[in-house]
Length: 102
Image (tube, rainbow, N blue to C red; front, side, top):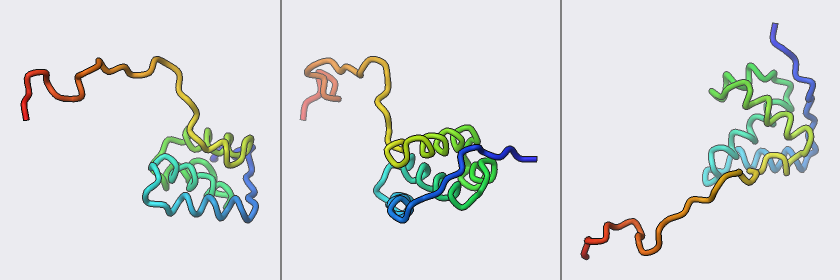
């Protein structure tokens, strides 16, 4: 028997319109489209297992975004800064080898 999520999603008209816009936008990063689709399906009452199967995504990912949306609404779907050191590229090495000529 599938587990039922404690995070029931109810959307305002504005939230639904924004999520539908994100889910249809071809120029958006794929992660944003998937997050919007997860929340839209959750709002229709579909359980995490079914959403994961439909989107070919791990159930844990569906659970994470359902919970984040429940707690933070639309801002919770944004990408958070990641930890760690920023990539550093040596000066003057713009992708070409030093000996390359045009």
